[in-house]
Amino acid sequence: MFLRTLSPGSLLIFLSGVFCLFAAVGIGTDLLNVDRSDPPHLLIAIILNGVIAAAFAWGWARGPVVLLYLGAATAIAHISINKVYPQIHHDLSLEQIRSSIILHGLLITAFIVLGYILLTAFVGSEGKRFFAAHTEIELAAGIQRALVPPLSVTCDGFEAYGISLPSGAIGGDLFDIVPCGAASFAYVADVSGHGVKAGVLMSMVKASVRTHFAVPGMREEKVLESLNDVLYPLTDAGTYATIAFVLIQGGRPLLFSLAGHLPIFHFKHQLGKVEQCSVENFPVAMFPDVRFEVSTLEAAAGDVVAIVTDGLTELSNKKGAEIGYGYIEKALRDSARSPLKEIAAGIVKTSEQFGTPVDDRTLLLIRLS
Image (cartoon, rainbow, N blue to C red; front, side, top):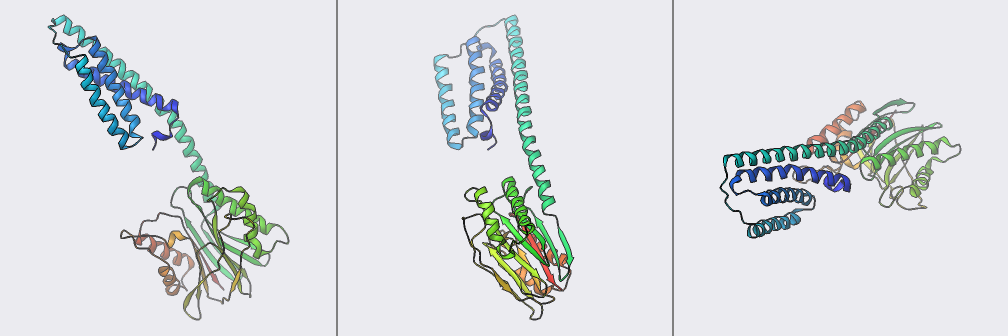
């Protein structure tokens, strides 16, 4: 996979270095048969060993079928050369043997040094490319950590705790709580894909949501339409974001909506049970001119609302079984009165004990007071 990413110039330098190193091996092999060596056979040993090694290095990136063809071609080349230029025994004097050994030694040294120079140049040029990309990834990861830090707040009417654990250096999950007048807009977003591209879209989602509420007169229930209108023209096909939000308004039912996201888990303190709250909508940035349905849920003091991403529910163990929703609902029922940070830690720990995480995991817990 690495060789496939090389530019033609870098690939040529790499294959030339391989040629030189294995040409030295060919010279050493010819030296072992010094009594049968002559200039044509020495040249053949240099070219044949170097070309075969470079061809196999190139073929390694093309798959096993190419390697099989190269193996067959190598066998045919050896047989053909031995027939055209058969080795003949020569009676050599000690001085001739000494001269031949010196010549072979000088050639071996020259090809090894040249191969070392070429491979060092290759490592240097590719190192610059790697560290340039690595630096960009580190920068993007730092930006993401700044955009999605662990959150623990206590406000008038509720407390909240959120955490996001990316599966790689850069994740595509996001959560935030945005003040909007006397209300608070809490949401979780899950951007399609991973890496820098997902991280860029994630930052665009956060900026767009905060911009929506910074403009006077913008309606809270229209935030998904606004977000979709902004992001759809700026994203390519197959790029989208799922979002779940709740609008916390003191003393009033919670307004909520989902854009292709998992259901919101609502633990009802008085009844001691968990309900899944859902609304059918498309993800954001998938289609133009989409209208998003919203709904409400009745919540009382002590109720806990949990919004998660599928990294916590689509986790599989070694047997292929999926963890599902049940453990999250159980954690809310069993630990609803515990600090939200402890509830979140318990959910994350259970998921990690079940299987190895392969997707970003994000959890936002809200307890009404």
